[in-house]
Image (cartoon, rainbow, N blue to C red; front, top):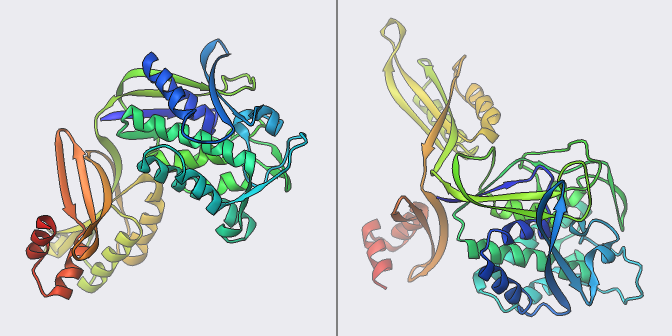
Amino acid sequence: MRTLYLDCSMGAAGNILAGALYELLNDTEKIDFIKQINNIGLLKTVISVEKVEKCGIFGTYIDVSVDGIKEEILFDKEPHHHNINHIDKHNHNHTHHHTSFQEIVNTINSLKIEDKIKKDIVAIYNLIAEAESNVHGVDVTEVHFHEVGMIDAIADITAVCILIDKLKIEQIIASPINVGGGHVNCSHGILPVPAPATASILKGIPIYNGDIKEELCTPTGAALLKYFVTDFADMPVMKVEKIGYGMGKKNFVYANCVRAMLGRSKQTSNIIELKCNIDDITPEKIGFAIEVLFNAGALEVYTTNVCMKKSRPGIVLCVMCNKEIEDKIVSLIFKYTTTIGIRRNISDRYVLNRKTEQIQTVFGPIRKKISEGYGITRIKYEYDDISKIAQEQNLSIDEIIKKIETK
């Protein structure tokens, strides 16, 4: 599987991620990318690249200028650490205009890029808008962004989306994210790092702060990682083909960069397997427990019949889940079954790359699950959608599928 691994031990920001991905292109592709990004129709914006050295390592810094002003001047701080939420930090005599989320969507949809990439950009910006909405206690429609910060963020997000599409990446894995520490100035005052919007976006994602008292992860960087990364974990076993370094402007004792490593990995993942033997529970209660465990996010739950001590019939309950929800699943097993002990194993599994698309049919929208990898492509319609239509139309599932595929 074509895998990208991102080392976020120094955080992440839109233009730094773009710089790391840019370095994975060949020379011709780099020239084409710069031409493309500067001709998408984002007014007053020029994107350029610069070779930067940090701690003896050379990488690419992506520079964004809006109306002739570089972003480090615009925001009077680390260029990739821009706060796009209501920020008004620069000291230039410009008329300040704030932009609604709907105006941002209209701007994105006017760009000269593929519709798929536009959808990605809107979805990523929506993560930022929702975070701002939650933090400030207002509806998304009431969140407004400083115009310059908005254009700068769109440029960063668009660059990353285009680059990921160009690189034909099938899987993105990232390290836990170093968010930095200390405090950051914004239009609302002095706030703790990670900034509230960043912290909101990163809920459910492994983060930490090291000994650098600076903002290392921005809302834009957080949203890009949340949207594209399939797993936050240690680097998988992979054959690395290319390495890219995206650089920031500031100097620290550590290299201020995101390292991107592109290569091939086996389509494997780690899962937690939890098992327990039970011989004193009713069928109704075990059925209810299985339903609760699935609703909690378990990947698989099943039972097998066994003969236990004193020749008593019983079952082995097996629950498979991701590491992130292991504690929750363990608590639910103890709560909803009569077991007094759970066995735990870590299993490696080969997996196909999976995604779900919604298609339009003669019966209306239906979800379609697509699994790919190892030269195999499998397509399966969502059972809940098909079975509902079958009941409504008084047809069999096979008849429904036949009608979908022949229309």
